[in-house]
Length: 177
Image (tube, rainbow, N blue to C red; front, side, top):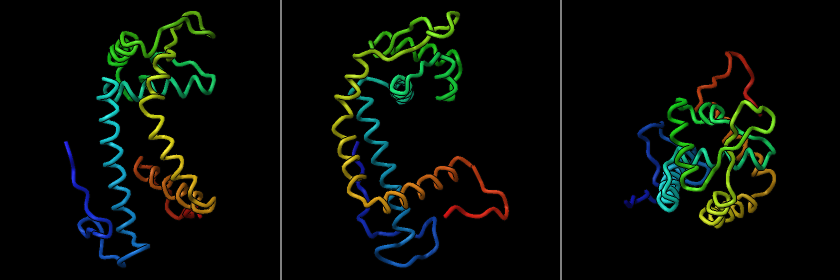
């Protein structure tokens, strides 16, 4: 499926009030963010197709790989909480990851009564082969910014994430600088 993206500079006033045209436009900034979200969704769909995995399966594998990199071990209930899904759903999800060689169940190293879910070498290698080049390009774009620009963008995205998550500042609380 292919989507045509509006040309840069084509500001929409549908959601937002009229804004100053050109560089620095608030509306254009939000339109670029929307275009990025659309591009990212299409990329995730392609990765899912390439790896023959659903979105939740990819998110679970990512969580397992991140936990391993941080020296942590996850249980199925941890994955259910992270992905906001029911225990029965996470059990089926882990069954698929195990069946496809992306993860395995092992005794939990700190709690013998629990079963850990850990990524396999195959799962790690497949993710790196599928996403490595794209992540390298994203890293290069981020590195091309000055440290100050990265700080500004990071602050903007952090605030936007908090707003999207419904974390509204208390009345009278100072806005972060």
